[in-house]
Amino acid sequence: MWRDSETEIDYLDYGYIVDIMIDTINDEKLLPSCIGLYGDWGSGKSSLMHMCMKKLKEQKDDTVCLLFNGWLYESYDDAKTAILSSILDGIKENRKLEGTALEIIRALYQSVDKFKLIKGGIKFGIDLALTGGIGSIANLTMKSVIKKSKKVLGELDEEAVIKDIKEKLDYKELREDIKEFREKFAKLIEAAGIEKLVIYVDELDRCSPNTILDTLEAMRLFLFNGKVAFVIGADERHVSYAIKNKFKDIEGINMDIGKEYQEKIIQYPIRIPSMNKDETEFYILCLLAENELEEQKFNGLLSYLQEKRAESPLEFSIDMTVLKGYDDRIATKLNESLILSKQLSGILSSGLNGNPRQCKRFLNTMDMRQKMARFKRITLNSQILAKIMEVEYFNPSLFRKMVELLGKNLLETELRALESEDESALKALIPWKDDLWVRQWIKIKPPIGDKNLMEYFYFMRSSVNDKTLVDIQKMSEQAKKIFDGLVKHSDSIFREAKKNVDKYMFLVQVCFR
Image (cartoon, rainbow, N blue to C red; front, top):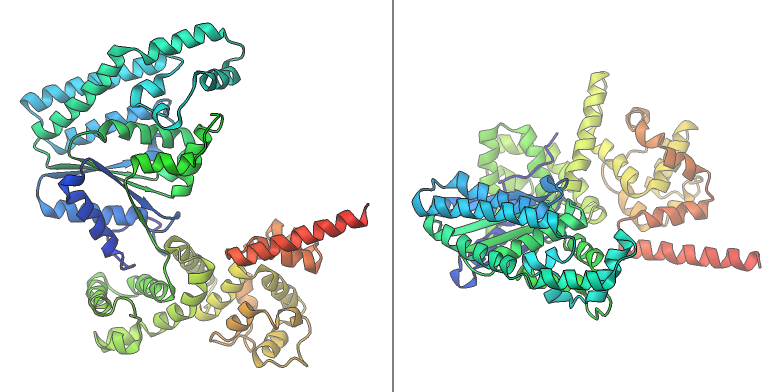
């Protein structure tokens, strides 16, 4: 099986994304800056950050890279000051600080401690005072603050509250502390001999809305001066949701606050594309080869394949000729892996939206089932297991029917009829004979109509016995089709299923008038 973690090995040919990040970071005219590395969960954000850090460290030009995992501060009451302390800790660990640099960082730690005290002692307006916060972006009014406060604290003396807020917002000492913190931090970078400070913020989209906002607002302290670059890895939809959730009660906002706020902080967005069929095939083959070959042989093969891909980056695909061009024996050893990668690539790239993590999880599930079978002295053919799992993942209605037919000893007969397109012999699977996905799936090698599939379904019992499946069995055929459409990954299929739901509900209303 394969670890679900970041890697510094580029299986996805995303080196150009790393290169543009490094080019942006190294452009001193753009500093301070913030890069948004956007992508779905599992799209490879963490791996790209590690690749970028590795390349920057190889420059050996006094660039310091810090990795900050936002999720680790999820439980902190004040994630904002925890982040500030974490950045100072990272500089202290990466640089031997003496003289002026040591004095400055001590003063900065004291400032963070002061921010903590202020945060704990002021009930109103501190977010505005600490970072410039939402007031500069959302035009927050006194009424909005009072409205939000009443929801939490109940009835308030509005005049006293307004006076208290004005005092805090006009609190010159605090504003001067913030300004002084920024200036001292810029001096610390210079005194510590840091050419550039690059702070990678990962796992932000796993955090609660409050932690996401605390992280973004803490970053604002560093984005006004100094040689600092942030790289934020996140799904921008989750960040946008957090921002909108923060400001949902503010009246008079005639703009997309989630988009506007992100654009204010993140100047250079980079979006990770989904893998296409050829990229998915390459990725799957690399994972399979990693398990099949010794480390040295695998590294040599990977370097060779990356060189070949660089010759024709937009049209490259792997076949036996390419593998034999490297080594005949390795090509022979990887023959089954190549066949399996070609079998899976089309369906997984479309069904899983080209998501690397989901592809890896599919392979891990497949590998786990094969291992469980071996513990019972049973061998499951990878290609047959993969073909059945494709139905399990992407066509649950057909999967349920296959389970039902297996119990009646009719599955082999029906599958042979479906494979041979013999409509006269087809009975239970007639509803699927014109389904485009099923027609493409049934033609994928190997044919399975002449196989005894009992052993394969035995190790898929967790899916077969799932309570959801039991409940679905009670639905009408039309309801089952609508349910399958609603859980599909395809937007077009989902929309069609939703239309059917609306149509069905309309008919129900007519019948019961």
